[in-house]
Length: 249
Image (cartoon, rainbow, N blue to C red):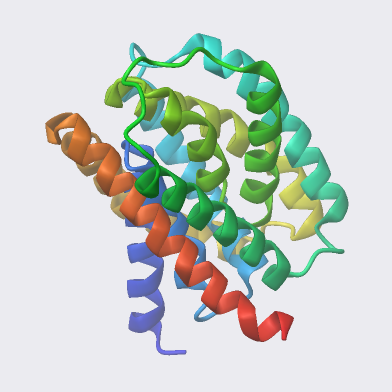
């Protein structure tokens, strides 16, 4: 593959990861499908993990005062369980089946949000049972393809947190999840000097995306912020379902 084409795709993926860590979580889901145009999905996920972790560090600093500790106490342990399940089943579940599952969850959530009557504007309290379920599913899908966004949003969006708290909670949750994936990924597909060198070249694009994501998050009105997140989730979910169909038929 032509080097410039590969570098453009890698840089664009890193920039999308940075945007997601800056506060636009759904956008990061596009990174692995984008790189899957030139490499196996699991290889793309492993390659991008260092970029996720570096962007997480910047995101933690940016949102260090804006997050929901009550939600994180529920979601983080569940997410770690999901990673364990993902590690145990990574060689048994097909990419197509997982993509279909994640896509259907996202589509169902968006349609339910858009078609039902306008809900009460009062913020809901964290629900332990549902938080553990969606947190574990988010950790599982994040392990397989960095696609933990839809399950996380299915649980979090109906609770109507302020946008910066929502973004900060997402950033901190996935920072822990991504750090926990380092050892399992090393066992599945060990890092090489070549893969780490590629990741190093992508650092500027990721950092730029993180800062841009935080800038956009702070300036978008709450209504537009959540609307754009839902639209992005719906679009990505449709793409996942469409891409998964040939592998399941």
